[in-house]
Amino acid sequence: MKISRKKFLTFLGSIPVLGALGMLYMRLAEPDWYEVTEKDIEIGRFASPLRILHLSDFHASESVSLASIEKAIDLSLELKAEVAFLTGDFITWQLTEESEYKRILQKLSSQVPTFACIGNHDGGKWAATSHGYSDFSKVRALLKESGIRLLFNETAKLDLKGKHFSLVGLGDYWSGDTKPSGVLFPTRSADEAVIVLSHNPDSKEGLKPYDWDLMCCGHTHGGQLVVPLLGLRPFLPVVEKSFPEGLLTWGKRHIHITRGIGNLHGMRFNCRPEISILNVT
Image 1 (cartoon, one colour):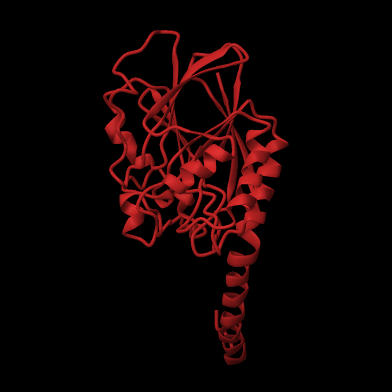
Image 2 (spheres, one colour):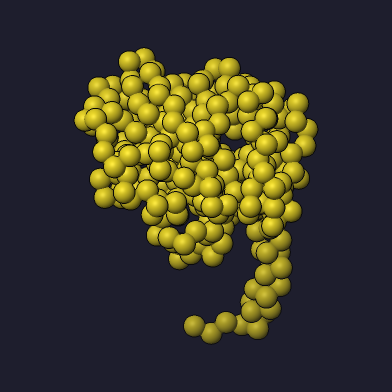
């Protein structure tokens, strides 16, 4: 089909406009357009579903306002979860407006028992090389004062409405702090459910020798920018590229990777921030 010179020049002239609209969408529309997802997971441990709220990667910063995080938490509270898991990266580089952030996090913890693991941006060896804190003491204090229990290579034994399970929170993988020995074991009793919180899904390789049911992760942001039709995720920050997001089966185990609430650099495209509900039986 022959295209006239006028139509071709019109098309060329539209490219900057389309580019500008795309940038506005990435920065102003999608980052605060939360998607609520709900998934059923059968691990064969609970007679009735355990309703889990899984959030991750708040990334409080100049790019992600506390108002945006509060909006996500307000939406989350409407979903009536029995327990909330937060899988790291509460900040990007530095903690600011601590009292306001604490107030927002307390909205969640005052309504739902809330547990967390640490992320690579929250402080540690990796963060120290990337303009962040050399340790995560500031984030630990924030969580404690907000009524959120941080599990750092620790186990909590929980009983929620007759549902008994062990919750294991691991240290950050990029900082070399993932230490499952002593908190996970090669075998467990037949009726014991084991759920793991680990920020980075690449940490799964080190957990192969241990017996657990479900691991909740963040870190990937789902790639944050996903090329339409092709599904390419050029900025996916993991080694295992086939595990970008969602609920995945890994042998007899399950891994849930949420796209997270915040972002880096204030942009998302074709990869909306996610509020996740997991119904585990």
